[in-house]
Image (cartoon, rainbow, N blue to C red):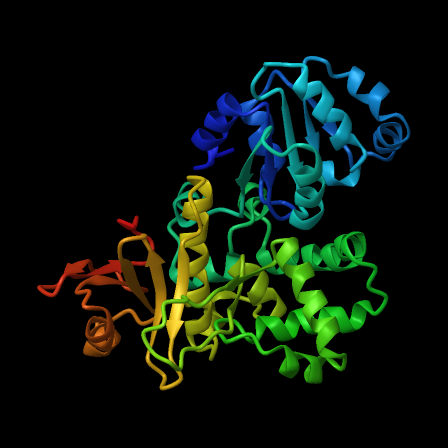
Length: 384
């Protein structure tokens, strides 16, 4: 097992709050992280039918078994526990007494917000970031290999081919988790919807278009999109609200939280296919944006990432809102630096007065230009 980047933040939260919730998609390493950081705590999987029945029928009696604290895995499976946990935590001064993990953001947040507000710290854990993939991979990875594999830990821990592991993950997710979140009867249409989403990576979210191609109404598509968001399959990147132009785009962009999962849904069977695949640029953009999200989650920082685009086609792939300034980032899938990489910065300077920024690209050379723009390879640590 490699040490997760989020380890230090988890330890800090456990010193500050009476309980900590680790939230993220299934198989992202939540349980492994919790048990590694808190080896002396009892581990309880609420996926176990017998334990879940005990916790559901007699929450008070169940919690009495763990007066010294515990790790409750997939805690959203027993929402009855949270109100009883509240009383226990109010009567105790101990920090980090209970560690909760959950793979469904909506259910866990809803239950916690009602019962444990002010008593709990949150840590969001997504699959491996670039830094962690570098530690976990048995050999150096090309950009195509990383896009194809994605970052789910079991692929690296057990050396399982992505084209074997990921389709089974998708099947389990659709058949099991989706029904837990929302009682979707037409699973075939839902699975078609998820594949259509993979083909729209990096595009503005158009619910009407998805509805037409899926064969359901827009209200259903909106509901299904919330399911994908709450289970950490997709991330909707919001446009920045600063109105430099009267005609700015206000729809979010659609990305997946793991490019390996997206590749599987797109029917990509090996990394070599990505060399000439028409969606390689979109997948690379997706990978970089998700990596920026992971770095903030791992440090438990605010998610201050946006994109900016106006109706004339002027855009910036990423805008980091630092409060006092908006820091621009362009993402390029090419491996050779060209003048085209910098053209959007000229317009950005014109409307904001800001000079500088970062280009993240698929090559290996690092540059610092006289206009303050840094060119940084995709697998290097970013200064933002």
